[in-house]
Length: 86
Image (cartoon, rainbow, N blue to C red; front, top):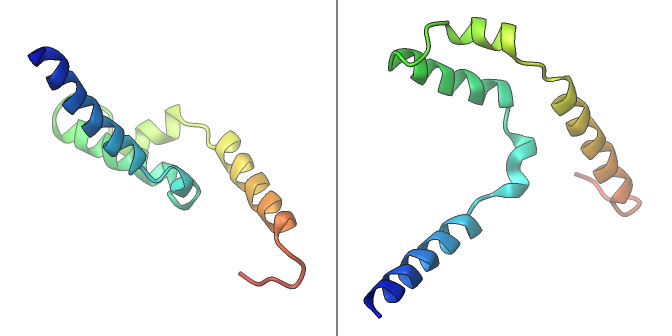
């Protein structure tokens, strides 16, 4: 009985955490900045040897994400009511 009560309490906390995540904000963030930030932290911790700028230059391709963002902007504009301003 105690284990199931603990599991329910832990699950409730996880559900609150996940429901608070701003999934609709991903378009506002710059993915390259995020990768650079975490790469710098990993480099400082000694977990990776290459510098963040080199890691980004050699191992990332933002074309897909940039195209997706562009299409989402076009789609959002087309769904707005005529005469609406941003």
